[in-house]
Length: 411
Image (cartoon, one colour):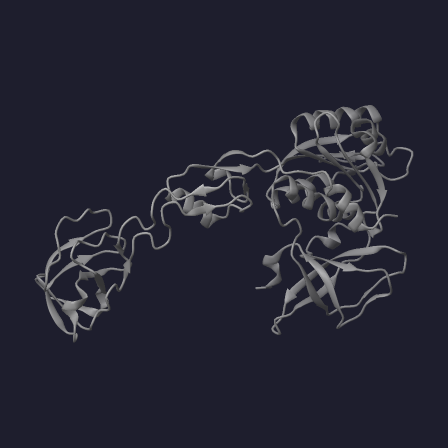
């Protein structure tokens, strides 16, 4: 058997980020920038008020309770031409440009406006520059906004939009084809013939891809035939950036995926027995003609999900240009026992974990450990590593991958 770490290293060894291209900002969320972007304009573009109030000269408020003559009102979007002179003030709305002559803003709540609107009492002394957003306070012209390797989050996309950018050079999301192999599989909703089962792997993998920010293409179900599997993988490799196949990687008479990978990927294709449970059988190769990585995952549904987390997701993040390939891994305290057998393998067990009042993440329950029990893992939000040995008991600390951080709060 090969260790999980060695298998992952082999998968990641020759993978490179996809060639960057121009992406519209609306399509770039979560993508990784491949080029530097500089600020075209200062931000703010001009001095403006951070609140509704009165633009004035701070020196006119010394001592507090000063009455000033109101000469007008400025709204956001206005281009004021009037100047605020000594003893004067202008009403100003949030975001409106600061008029010439003014150096500060007094919030409306600290003023009393005369009923006729011609004068206002400033009830306290105003600090010079108070409530004024200075030009370039956030961004200066020529400042680096985006560096290669930066992930495009909502705020960064907003910054680019505020600078007049409509696109960014970034690594695209990989398009990943998903196929299931097996004569026993059905997509139908009606009564199944004897010996048939409905395919759960493709739906769960397609959902996993979307949840991880990748694009997915359903390649359907392929029968246990070397020719059919070869044709399906070749068609997928002509369109996709990566392919996930489930089933056909063990040692059975109908396990053809391994031999097909050798044909399509050459001697670098590997069929492995990984020292992990579930998901021990695993095959991987990169097509000779198109350079598309193919992941052959075990066909049992829980094995498929574990294989996705262990091998596929980190590899796809490498293709997408991400620097951080792995999910957050943290220590958790067991509130339930997690026994296991000694068999030389690393167990990866789905669990439900929550942050308790002590501020520590607790494992509240663990799924039954069998590769076919998909419903048993449906509510899991973490995946615990159990090294070879007797397992772990209540109060022990274990390490686990966080699958759904939002569910850790339990709120």
